[in-house]
Length: 192
Image (cartoon, rainbow, N blue to C red; front, side, top):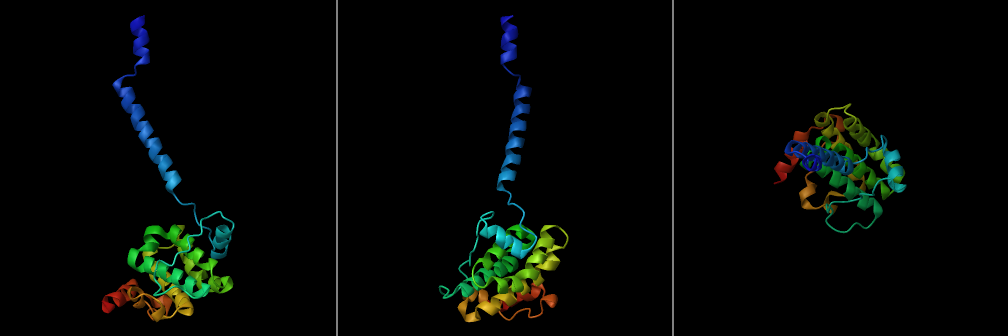
């Protein structure tokens, strides 16, 4: 009977292996749940409201794209927007991290005149929301999204206000509906 008690207290190797696999699987799932961003709001205004309410972090970031410290919040917002154009063109951001891009683009509207930001970025944000919801193809939408944001950038900062690495984008794709990623990336290659 002592042997029976020992057998019950010491699990078999197969049971240990099974429990280990289960533990690893559950740990991985938990990590995914913790690491995944909450879905962004479906509208730009709604996302900015969530940021201002503290439901999302304010990820306002100009990415160091400006040649010097911005003098106004409007210039800072333009730098933030230019950083997002760079993320789309240089990092394939729409296909790779559309939800994060939505949150980060909305953060650009936390500085400067919000109603102007909503008017200038509303369509780009809506397209990002469609990509996030898998209603629109990321690769097809990316050039238009970048061009729409670029138009907003050009209202807030001048080409000379940006670092040289981003100046190639200015003046590109004046018609967002006709913009291509090759046109945006080709502009960069021509500047090099």
